[in-house]
Length: 145
Image (tube, rainbow, N blue to C red; front, side, top):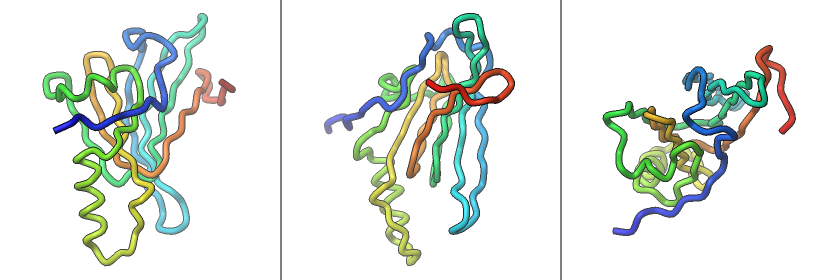
């Protein structure tokens, strides 16, 4: 069986070994038809003498998985120090099939499988509808990229 193809959506601006703190996972629940929920991963790095907070936003997450260092699958290697979009993965097909088998009428055409591997773990898989990256200073104010 062929490996699924992937494309890079985000690459760490600093070496993955330079993370000062994190990653910290957080889930922000949405409200049906009012506000989109999301999962976030945040981590801190030192960049040009300043501490920068990188926030990865996985918007409208419908499923995710977490693997610690010793449980990371060998297929995770392409996601090292970056967020990748894994086209047509078996996990994505499984989740789409479950959603489509229910009478909810929810569309699955915009669902994507994203993955990220931090240095020495953890590794995350996200099945979600959208992705964004936000860079902040130590005080929490957004920084233009």
